[in-house]
Amino acid sequence: MGEWWRTADHGGGVLVTDTTVVSAIAHHTLYATYVLARRPTVTTTAPVAIGTTTATSGGNVTNVGSSAVTARGVCWSTAAGPTVADDKTVNGTGPGGFDSMPSKLRPATTYYVRAYATNGVGTAYGEPLSVTTPPASGPDLVVTSIVLTPAIPAAGGKFTATIIVKNQGILSGKAGNLYVWLDKPGTVAVGEKGDKSASVSTLKPGVSKTVKMSLTAPKTWGTFTLRAFIDAKNVTTEDDEYNNQETSAYDTGLPDFRITGVRISPELPLAGKTFTAYVTVTNSGEVAGDAGYLDLWADSSVMTTAPVPGPKTKGVVGDVPGTGERRLTVALWGCMMVPQA
Image (cartoon, rainbow, N blue to C red; front, side, top):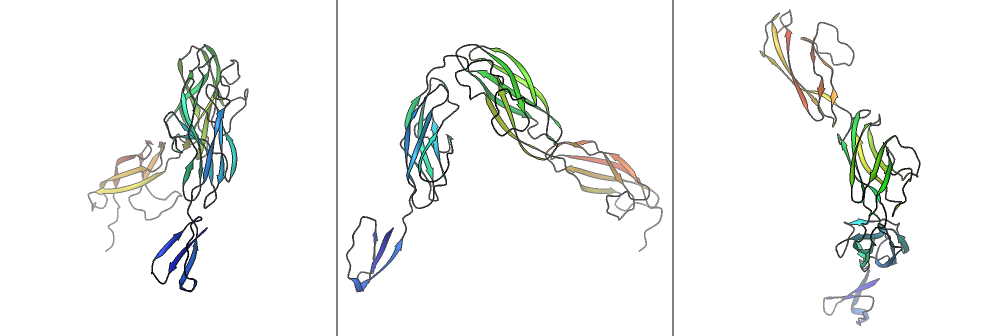
């Protein structure tokens, strides 16, 4: 807290900080209090328990600044001066010390680690410290990539997960079973059975293998977390037993069919004569779907989901891609009676 003084004698102002002393004639002086906008103050804890792919670090928020600390943790990068835009952990809020574990590090690599703390003013950082992971000494099996095709599967529809697993260690290792869960946000335990599995052979050091699985998406619309777990039964002792799982968030979608255009030719058809209707069916959804049949009536002003009485003509629409459209040309018989004026 500080004070802002304004003297009547000089008409100017003097900013008073916590350590500044200003003298003034009391009856000529007006003042108001103010709050300095400050980021937090945070220090970085030296990394310990350094493994080939993980380390333990942390920090200490010694001053929250001018507002509450809403996020804190550590960030790391192979480049000096890592920020929250790089890899980071989130370890609670408020003042005080905290422990954190940078993960998914590479063996025999130097990283820069520093603590951060964020309040309403901005993000402050502790001093950057370097850490070098030791070289791998055995096998280390990881999931390096998950690609879904299509990226947004239809709810209840089929899709393919292409998963790449790798032995990033220096010794060969049995990859065992690759388990996949359709929706598993939280880490699973060794031996927990997945929704689908595949057997992966022994992988030599530095070798990757691609596994494709055909899956059925959840029947409901929403956001889900696909999880892949290599060596899910822990048949191989590895340098790091905590980096065998990886996830990929995905959405399921539904088709949404609409008629977005109707044009007839000729514009004034003759009574009792055929004319042509040009109809555009649009799928506003993100996933493909079978739109089935398009029913057309030469004369119907009724809008309903129930069957409309009277003669009608059908047009086959079929599959419409997500955010795509189909255009149909359908011949119709004109009304037998001439419309009244």
